[in-house]
Image (cartoon, rainbow, N blue to C red; front, side, top):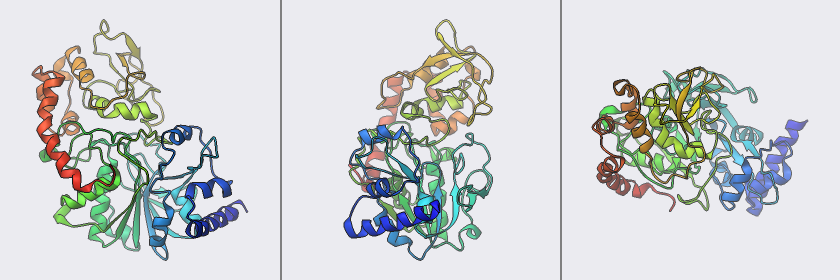
Length: 421
């Protein structure tokens, strides 16, 4: 009975959208009583009162889905948000639930790293399965099957891509985007991207990746912080011929409305288990370097990517300490059960550039410098130069100066693909 009401509500909503031009968020707020409320959306409402997400711009993409067999690349962040200012606590519903309720033929779901509901550890193998709510089959796009194969796409007419990125090269959702675009191009399937804000879209910074060191945590010659939304990034992948054999994806980006790169946007839900809040997301491009060292970056605590520490850092200098534990999303964190000395950055200033000082100072104050870096650091940095610079004793200012020619060239190259100011 509840599900039937839910379905009819969305059908009624779509009629109203088309006939009256009203916002999806308003329709959902006023007509759907079966939507879960979350307090954290209050911050979204305050920071983005006029923002309309790609997923919320439903009248722009619903006609593209009529009488089509649909696949969806998504996770827990694939939400249609209530944007009505009439509610103190905004609401949301999952994109998959919304399309199913509209009697659209959703055939298959695809999940990236962390799984469809976003609870798996970083790097954990994600297995195929079924969505508990809809019963739809889920295909993992992590591990050995990063790219949908022809058999997984053969009965699809269109694929929707709706993932919340955080704007860092080593955040693997943009790598999943690459492989999905490539698969769509090779199998003549249109890809629709429902665009979302980049919470680190207000700056561009970091070394440009050396193609010799391309990996799943860095596939393209871009800086660590690229400043692009998913829709803009997809256009750049197409335009720069980064797909295998130069194939082109038939791409449709459902743009946001009233979005700028300077907009300070707090995400309504965690984009992944170890990025719990706006502070962690803002610090992530700077602290993720520690993943390639013997320093813990807050995994196994309730301040993931807001603290860092190691048993090997000088406790006379680093007065803050913590002990990583086994937690959801970090079952076996670095230095599990060991006392780590480091720094708490949870109250630090909002970053508008990558901070290298924490990394350099940790290197200078570790017990054994030869054991500080590991091979993963080269993949994260996109080459060997950054480690060599730190080991040579270069300052943050000197290192950042060496990035400037590459950053200048990248900003010019990305200009044709920008959709927003």
